[in-house]
Length: 407
Ligand SMILES: Cc1cc2nc3c(=O)[nH]c(=O)nc-3n(C[C@H](O)[C@H](O)[C@H](O)COP(=O)(O)OP(=O)(O)OC[C@H]3O[C@@H](n4cnc5c(N)ncnc54)[C@H](O)[C@@H]3O)c2cc1C
Image (cartoon, rainbow, N blue to C red; front, top):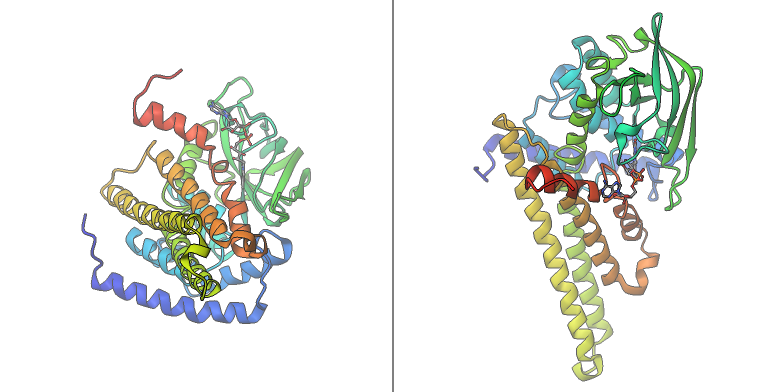
């Protein structure tokens, strides 16, 4: 593995950095200092305007082919773009469940007609996609899902309920798993359907998260008719009754390379180091004139412990970066990651919590007043749940990576 960037890659970084700095300032300038979260109706619209700026300048999906709105950039360049994106303070991508989860599966399983209809519209935010997998009684055990699609003349009739659908209330389309063979059980007989949410018989009901944002929705299907041509090229991604293998490809994007790139955590680690400098600066000035004895050995010890944690966080973010470079090398060489993506997911989700908990401990009593760190911490707590819980990832790692016996 060669850890040096080529001249072209350095040039790509310079171009991305310049565009992001200039255009983030324009976007922020147009919407004021306190842009609402993209997981609220008002904030979603503002973030969508940002997605459109990215798309128009061909930065929305850099690694996609030009015909679908990308730059044909390599995976290495994509990593560079992600680093620059988060370094510049780019906002969370409200199109992420489409561009990072669904799209890799559309490239792998979609027909050319599906690809040419779905991909560019998704990247431009014209169609906004949400993930409709979880149900009230099917989360970790996804194969127990009961939503069904019945074959009728010219299409499918959908019945059932999905839940925990991120940003579902603001989306126009859903990619969901439905049982299409009523005689089948578990992983067999499921199909991966592409569903416009404005069909008769579909009800989308948004609801709030613990952090106050309305980021979730329940989606109800009551005899909704999904015509075969509701999506040009067809509404089934992959083959009928073979949706499980498509879904597993999507989860590998969700847990592995695309959803959470190292750039996000490297930028948070840098912000943590800045915070540590600020806090040690302010505590030095607060203690100016007081003797070391008055300050107390316990205070000094806890400051040292905190600094050690900051360093460990930075090292863990760097380790994740190096691990990802290794993953990209394997992918480029035609050895895509399999069950190892579960280890990746464990690493980034636990790192995110540690980064934010360390920040809150540095802030002390001021933590409750600090919006970004406190909000980021609340969201980090959901990392071990979404994209497959960490208990499940540990099971997969034990059985399929380490070869330990199933219980
Ligand atoms: C922020 C966030 C966003 C989400 N977005 C979406 C979305 O857009 N679309 C979507 O479809 N879903 C989404 N989800 C749902 C998510 O996929 C599920 O919450 C997750 O799969 C767990 O399912 P569950 O909530 O039903 O919990 P359960 O499966 O009921 O699990 C409950 C607990 O039991 C543990 N457990 C279950 N089975 C085992 C086992 N075999 N071994 C050990 N422990 C076990 C779990 O680890 C967990 O701790 C989101 C969740 C969150 C938190």
